[in-house]
Image 1 (tube, rainbow, N blue to C red):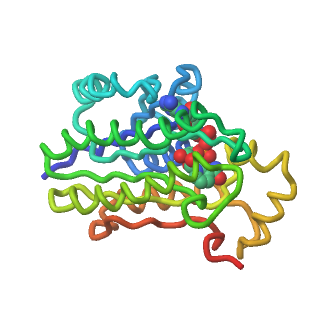
Image 2 (cartoon, rainbow, N blue to C red):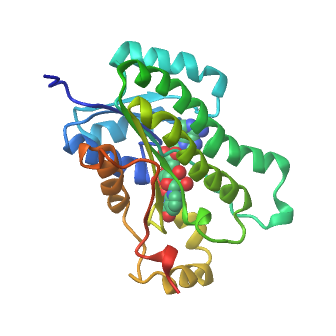
Image 3 (cartoon, rainbow, N blue to C red):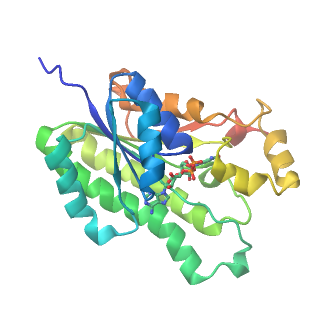
Length: 248
Ligand code: NAI
């Protein structure tokens, strides 16, 4: 009988949705490693989350270093059972002002780094024949939203990649799912909405539940998808959005 606690990696686990998920995992006895760029922020978040939480500072944009980084994590902590690809950046700019560099930067963090980290973690998950991965999409992949072209491209690709990964990896014991948060009150959405009341009104008016979500709402869905309760669920994109994606 395997009684050792599950081990999870959460990228961007020091703030917003990632931190809420970290706390939900720890509360459910899951040993959780959070990854981010800012050591101080990570340390504070790990203290806040409690004993089962550890952290490693790493800039996931450094894709060439990811294999060594994952090897060192596995050496120190063991093979992860769960990977939550939560780290992401947004950029709100009109279409013609987005430079190639802007576009690449968003694609790098939100897509290329997700691929590289998943590939390296999956190599280890395949050795034990089990694992669960959750990617994070957005309403920008459910319908058209202006001023977020690179973010939309990246998140739409994340949904396709989730399905492709699920078909290839599920026969080998690894489930891959995706959560598409609606508009959730975090620092990221604050930057996009607080200075733009018209956009915020538009968001709320097409959200049947009439409010922004809480990071804990998304964390609960991620916890479910990684848990044994979802052991027959793979390849889905689960909106957690107060109905925003189906709102009129
Ligand atoms: P946040 O800005 O609080 O969290 C993002 C985290 O990712 C931060 O901790 C940041 O340090 C980390 N990160 C960014 N680039 C990194 C890099 N190169 N290396 C390591 N860590 C990096 O934002 P929030 O809102 O919690 O977003 C989490 C995820 O949810 C993102 O993927 C975002 O696109 C997605 N999302 C958020 C929504 C919202 O309304 N807040 C809506 C839809 C999706």
